[in-house]
Length: 320
Image (cartoon, rainbow, N blue to C red; front, side, top):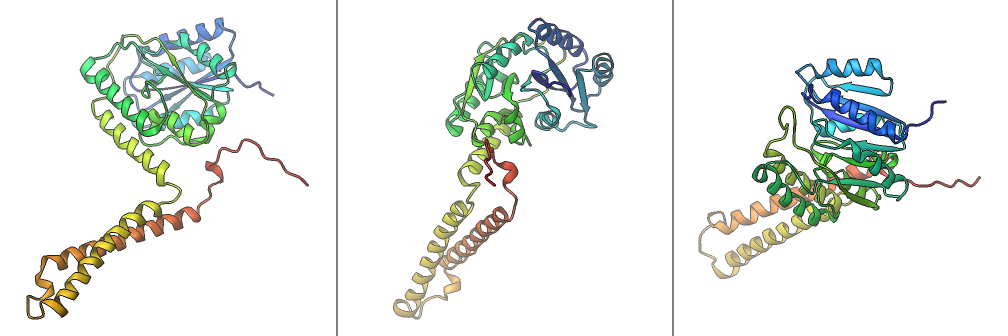
């Protein structure tokens, strides 16, 4: 039986042909010196510069290296998700392939998981070698918002250098653009012992960044999604039902006012359908009913799906 490696290292990349050989040598040298067994899982997210041929050569020469190739660019979250499925190590680490993340940090992150008992350790690029206005300043605003909305007190959600217990990555599903919120997903799954470590960050040597300013817009939208799911994901009727109830009250209130005014007070006035209050009442009652229906449908979907795979079950005791 093959022994589990100490570390499973997942590295997503796209068009990093110049960085990959040096990164591989750096990782194997550092982990070898620290006597850590490992596997490296490269995930090619639709490269077009020959990066895959480089990875094929590495895989043929080193059985500890595995690789996954996407036919087109699906995004970092999907790449990480595919890599996580193959992980067998006791600790799973992730890092970017552009040589800006330091391989020297991997043994330290591993020790924090194994010896200090953390479920997850996230890197913090305290000193960054990126554009102040395009990356540093927007990143500070983004991280401030993420901390306050999610309740997970990290300084750098975007850092690609992270370490996890194997149970963490097997208990969460990374999709869309949620890779930056893996600590939040882990916290929602019940893994509360989340740590942070200041890590080295280097200037980019080859190629160019694959992320533009739009990533911060997507990040804020994903943050809103996470907040909503965390707050109302288990009982959608609490959200949709509240809004629906308020709208129905407003609608019935206007309808009652129009009826009383027409029958008792202004019997020879305009037709009800000619008054703007009629359309306010009609619109709010229709929208309120739709919100109620959305809440009911959400509740039905939740009650009829299998939740067992989403739970973080630590221990099961069976008595015969």
